[in-house]
Amino acid sequence: MSVRTVLLAVVGACLLCAPAQAQNAEAAGGSLRFAGGSSGSLNFVVTDPPRVRPTGPIEIWEWTFYRNERTAGHLSFDTGAYRVRIDCQAGTRQVLGAELFRDGEHLLSLDEAAPAATIASGTVQYGTVQMACEPGFAAGREAVPDHRAARARVDQYYRANP
Image 1 (cartoon, helix red, strand yellow):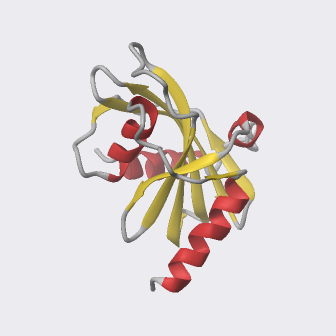
Image 2 (cartoon, rainbow, N blue to C red):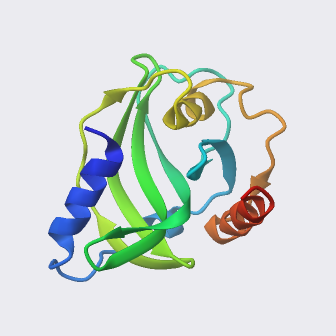
């Protein structure tokens, strides 16, 4: 089952939930670096490039900026911040929670974990694993200060590449 399917199911189930919890992705802070993308989304991660390959699991924030708004129930969002656990040794990525945004504003926080999944080379998520695990992978990749600056860069890219 894809992360998007799990996310949409959880969002649909939580539309009747209490108001969102704290905005942990923004509170975590840190600059974002481009990790990879597809025609429908671009991914950035909040992590300093590793000096050595991590030997145990690490947790990072992965920000996905969608080309077009996504809708789940009555909720429309253009950005997802995903708290993920990366196990560099196993080559897995596990979504631990998500926060959804539209136009830079926080909409909803979800603390539902998805199962860990092996990440295949060439996928969008593979860039996240590489960014978190491989020394030198982020060399030369400019860091932007926050998700709003990253969204502005992504929107500029999408306008130039319709």
